[in-house]
Length: 270
Image (cartoon, rainbow, N blue to C red; front, side, top):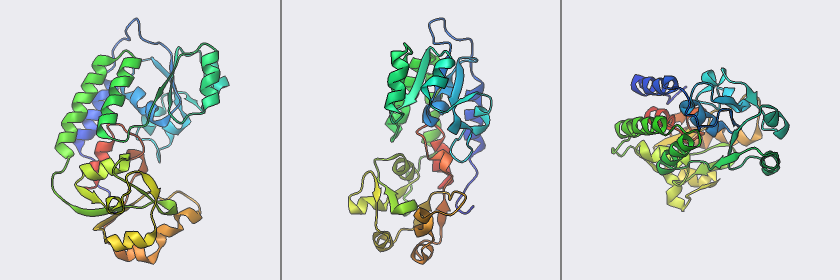
């Protein structure tokens, strides 16, 4: 896959160490935790004590989406349905902001504690998410260690060198601006996001003509999924192929969630 660079052994080793560093749970900590969101799955797996996390979402096992698919294979999965989660007898359910409202309401009515974490779209939000997960699991020390390692590795991989202009362009002609996770990754890797040329800060559509007019030095697209999709047809447009020969088809799993795994995405762009 062009543009893909193997993550450093330092990052891989540090993340692996965080998976191993789990001691006995604190008495006041929740003992049966269920995560029903891909991004909370990964933070919970990084921070939970042994035996504390009893289920993760089914997406956590998908290697196309999850940076911890192999680790997730050790956990029972759930599909975000209130009935199946209730039968797991959790004392804490951790969900994402866009989880089904009726499901969360039903779980709360059944007397189950439900905590919702917003998506992390910036470095500051990623740090806050790590801290919050540590608080929910009563694993503050583990969260502090993870945070320190994240900050240390971010300082190492963050680039102050200007690498040129880059375009984030996905299926259906969607782009991501600076105030998104993808934009944060791009900025940390030393690229100027062309979305800023058109006043785009969030995730929205961008006409192909404007991408071409911006003349980016690098074009970054999402990995294509199996099968045929009209939404992805725009990515095969001849104008894009001629625009930036140094095209990187990103690995979605490192870009999907605001977790320490974005370090691998930043390094891959370099």
